[in-house]
Length: 152
Image (cartoon, rainbow, N blue to C red; front, side, top):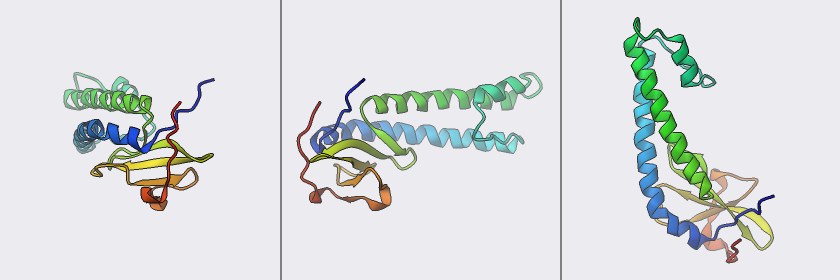
Protein backbone atom coordinates (compact mmCIF):
# COMPACT_ATOMS: atom_id res chain seq x y z
CA UNK A 1 0.00 0.00 0.00
CA UNK A 2 1.34 3.42 -0.98
CA UNK A 3 1.44 6.20 1.58
CA UNK A 4 -0.47 9.32 0.64
CA UNK A 5 1.64 12.28 -0.33
CA UNK A 6 0.63 15.52 1.33
CA UNK A 7 1.84 18.75 -0.22
CA UNK A 8 2.83 22.02 1.38
CA UNK A 9 1.97 25.45 0.05
CA UNK A 10 5.64 25.91 -0.84
CA UNK A 11 5.78 22.67 -2.83
CA UNK A 12 2.72 23.60 -4.87
CA UNK A 13 3.96 27.16 -5.39
CA UNK A 14 7.17 25.75 -6.87
CA UNK A 15 5.07 23.89 -9.48
CA UNK A 16 3.12 26.95 -10.63
CA UNK A 17 5.45 28.17 -13.41
CA UNK A 18 5.31 24.73 -15.02
CA UNK A 19 1.55 24.51 -14.39
CA UNK A 20 0.96 27.81 -16.16
CA UNK A 21 2.79 26.51 -19.23
CA UNK A 22 1.03 23.14 -19.06
CA UNK A 23 -2.42 24.66 -18.78
CA UNK A 24 -1.77 26.99 -21.71
CA UNK A 25 -1.10 23.85 -23.75
CA UNK A 26 -4.24 22.18 -22.37
CA UNK A 27 -6.31 25.25 -23.25
CA UNK A 28 -4.96 25.12 -26.82
CA UNK A 29 -5.73 21.42 -27.11
CA UNK A 30 -9.28 21.74 -25.73
CA UNK A 31 -9.90 24.64 -28.14
CA UNK A 32 -8.73 22.45 -31.02
CA UNK A 33 -10.95 19.61 -29.78
CA UNK A 34 -13.92 21.99 -29.73
CA UNK A 35 -13.16 22.98 -33.33
CA UNK A 36 -13.01 19.34 -34.43
CA UNK A 37 -16.27 18.61 -32.60
CA UNK A 38 -17.89 21.54 -34.43
CA UNK A 39 -16.68 20.13 -37.76
CA UNK A 40 -18.10 16.72 -36.90
CA UNK A 41 -21.35 18.27 -35.72
CA UNK A 42 -21.68 20.15 -39.02
CA UNK A 43 -21.11 16.83 -40.80
CA UNK A 44 -24.01 15.32 -38.89
CA UNK A 45 -21.87 13.34 -36.47
CA UNK A 46 -22.89 14.02 -32.91
CA UNK A 47 -20.59 12.46 -30.36
CA UNK A 48 -22.01 10.94 -27.25
CA UNK A 49 -19.84 11.61 -24.19
CA UNK A 50 -19.73 7.85 -23.58
CA UNK A 51 -18.33 6.94 -26.99
CA UNK A 52 -14.60 6.74 -27.56
CA UNK A 53 -13.10 8.14 -30.79
CA UNK A 54 -11.81 4.64 -31.66
CA UNK A 55 -15.35 3.26 -31.55
CA UNK A 56 -16.63 5.95 -33.89
CA UNK A 57 -13.69 5.53 -36.25
CA UNK A 58 -14.70 1.89 -36.72
CA UNK A 59 -18.15 2.98 -37.92
CA UNK A 60 -16.87 5.49 -40.50
CA UNK A 61 -16.04 4.48 -44.05
CA UNK A 62 -12.74 6.20 -44.84
CA UNK A 63 -13.43 6.47 -48.56
CA UNK A 64 -17.03 7.67 -48.47
CA UNK A 65 -16.53 10.15 -45.63
CA UNK A 66 -12.85 11.12 -45.72
CA UNK A 67 -13.47 14.56 -44.19
CA UNK A 68 -15.20 13.10 -41.11
CA UNK A 69 -12.65 10.31 -40.90
CA UNK A 70 -9.79 12.84 -40.84
CA UNK A 71 -11.61 14.89 -38.20
CA UNK A 72 -12.02 11.77 -36.05
CA UNK A 73 -8.33 10.94 -36.42
CA UNK A 74 -7.48 14.48 -35.31
CA UNK A 75 -9.87 14.15 -32.38
CA UNK A 76 -8.18 10.92 -31.35
CA UNK A 77 -4.71 12.50 -31.49
CA UNK A 78 -5.80 15.60 -29.59
CA UNK A 79 -7.59 13.52 -26.95
CA UNK A 80 -4.51 11.35 -26.50
CA UNK A 81 -2.35 14.44 -26.00
CA UNK A 82 -4.75 15.76 -23.33
CA UNK A 83 -4.83 12.39 -21.58
CA UNK A 84 -1.02 12.25 -21.50
CA UNK A 85 -0.73 15.74 -19.99
CA UNK A 86 -3.45 15.01 -17.42
CA UNK A 87 -1.69 11.77 -16.47
CA UNK A 88 1.61 13.62 -15.99
CA UNK A 89 -0.10 16.20 -13.76
CA UNK A 90 -1.75 13.48 -11.70
CA UNK A 91 1.64 11.86 -11.13
CA UNK A 92 2.72 15.16 -9.58
CA UNK A 93 -0.19 15.06 -7.14
CA UNK A 94 -2.37 17.48 -9.09
CA UNK A 95 -6.09 16.73 -8.89
CA UNK A 96 -7.64 18.51 -11.86
CA UNK A 97 -11.08 19.82 -10.98
CA UNK A 98 -11.76 21.79 -14.18
CA UNK A 99 -9.52 21.43 -17.20
CA UNK A 100 -11.07 24.42 -18.98
CA UNK A 101 -10.41 26.90 -16.17
CA UNK A 102 -7.23 25.35 -14.81
CA UNK A 103 -8.66 24.59 -11.37
CA UNK A 104 -6.57 22.10 -9.38
CA UNK A 105 -6.25 20.70 -5.88
CA UNK A 106 -3.46 18.97 -3.96
CA UNK A 107 -3.83 16.86 -0.87
CA UNK A 108 -2.48 18.51 2.26
CA UNK A 109 -2.84 18.23 6.00
CA UNK A 110 -3.70 20.77 8.65
CA UNK A 111 -2.95 19.18 11.99
CA UNK A 112 -4.57 15.77 11.49
CA UNK A 113 -7.28 16.93 9.08
CA UNK A 114 -6.95 16.18 5.38
CA UNK A 115 -7.57 19.26 3.25
CA UNK A 116 -6.98 20.41 -0.31
CA UNK A 117 -4.75 23.24 -1.41
CA UNK A 118 -6.51 24.91 -4.32
CA UNK A 119 -5.02 26.77 -7.28
CA UNK A 120 -6.62 28.22 -10.38
CA UNK A 121 -4.86 29.25 -13.56
CA UNK A 122 -3.94 32.92 -13.37
CA UNK A 123 -3.15 32.88 -9.67
CA UNK A 124 0.56 33.45 -9.05
CA UNK A 125 0.54 31.31 -5.91
CA UNK A 126 -1.72 29.03 -3.91
CA UNK A 127 -4.21 31.40 -2.35
CA UNK A 128 -6.99 29.05 -1.23
CA UNK A 129 -7.77 25.79 0.49
CA UNK A 130 -10.89 23.77 1.31
CA UNK A 131 -11.71 20.68 3.30
CA UNK A 132 -12.33 17.40 1.54
CA UNK A 133 -16.10 17.74 1.77
CA UNK A 134 -16.27 21.12 0.04
CA UNK A 135 -15.32 22.35 -3.39
CA UNK A 136 -14.39 25.48 -5.34
CA UNK A 137 -17.33 27.56 -4.13
CA UNK A 138 -16.24 27.00 -0.53
CA UNK A 139 -12.56 27.81 -0.96
CA UNK A 140 -11.08 29.75 1.94
CA UNK A 141 -8.12 32.09 2.05
CA UNK A 142 -4.76 30.43 2.58
CA UNK A 143 -4.01 33.12 5.16
CA UNK A 144 -6.44 31.31 7.49
CA UNK A 145 -4.28 28.25 7.34
CA UNK A 146 -1.14 27.49 9.29
CA UNK A 147 -0.02 24.54 7.24
CA UNK A 148 2.33 22.05 8.80
CA UNK A 149 5.41 21.34 6.72
CA UNK A 150 4.47 17.70 6.20
CA UNK A 151 6.27 15.64 3.60
CA UNK A 152 6.29 11.94 3.01
